[in-house]
Image 1 (cartoon, rainbow, N blue to C red):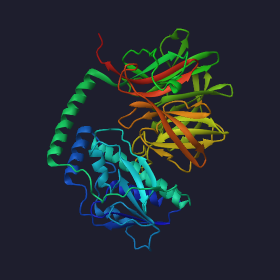
Image 2 (cartoon, helix red, strand yellow):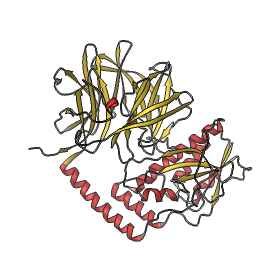
Image 3 (tube, rainbow, N blue to C red):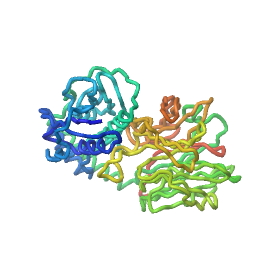
Image 4 (cartoon, rainbow, N blue to C red):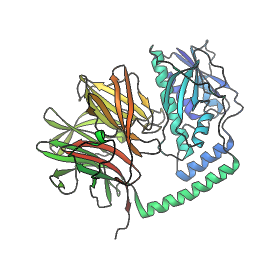
Length: 503
């Protein structure tokens, strides 16, 4: 298949070059070329000035949004034959078969992305062909409120969605078409005035000062774990915080505990946590034994690696204790086995490599093992990937929990910062699987969602959000992002503040 990409020939962006490279690497694509169009209404200079200010104040790199010279398109300027598919990034071509438009919140062209983010929205991206939606997703960001970060994260995920849709088309697959609403013309939507630019710049400077002062007074982020004895319905059945409230696992203020996973094994119950010492800024995995009256002491280290570890997904199988901690900093997903429980963890296998995967969660279902994780976009010039950590859910399956794992052909099966990232073990209720998810639409771990899995097989995946639990009087703070049960204990975690000086 020959794909032609129509874009602004005078001001190409780095994300467009990354898109061209990724399309060329897609199996089934025999040729890629560009239609370097003349676009009269590109991104305004005020936006470029705002980007430069944000990059300076927040120390952010310019990734997808960076302007490149027209010569960057030279490798793709070739007099090829008529293309099999045209991908129109400008939004100025009339709808037709074998022509894909990108629309952000229903508006054509990447200028519409700016309008959506300036309006404070979580952009909905749709890939439209002749009035039908071929692919769609909601685009997240790891730095809400910073336009540059939001744009670069959204553009990276745009590459993810487009390449996945092309891969399915080249392989002969297709999504069930959904009728799309008529899209406004390219360039419609909100812009940035000179007065707003000045206001945003002033707010950025003030915000940077406040942020610095806050971090001088408090250690942040600082998470904390809550637990309770499970003597009745759990949160999956309640759909809300219990009347009894939660007991906080104490810390000394110099470290925090997060991602609690209780496990009953070998006659005892331990809660495994991410332990993050503020002094080193590198997390390890620790564990604390729970007795009839709660934790017996403080968590003690049980697993440390040269890289950051978190989300200690622990389970029992074949009479032994196993763990799959998050190790996205190493670009792998690894399986460990306990030799001196709760410690003595040794690496048994690398389940995935070359992937920046967050919060890998295993599930045995219908005779296969499934792995759920959110994945950053595999940017060619960024080994650590690009885009948000929270919004693209990918699946892998294997005949055994030790592997080998095969990626789902529809990956990413879901793009949505509110319902993609795992938040704990998947449970069964009434013959249906319920998946705890992190709602990161307004920031990392803002709330906890409960999603019913409606389909999980080698051909497809679907889920429905059936509940949402937020921080509040029963669990103070601004975040809530993990839920797990085991050994008669239910655990959650969320944010707190840790003063640097304690009286």
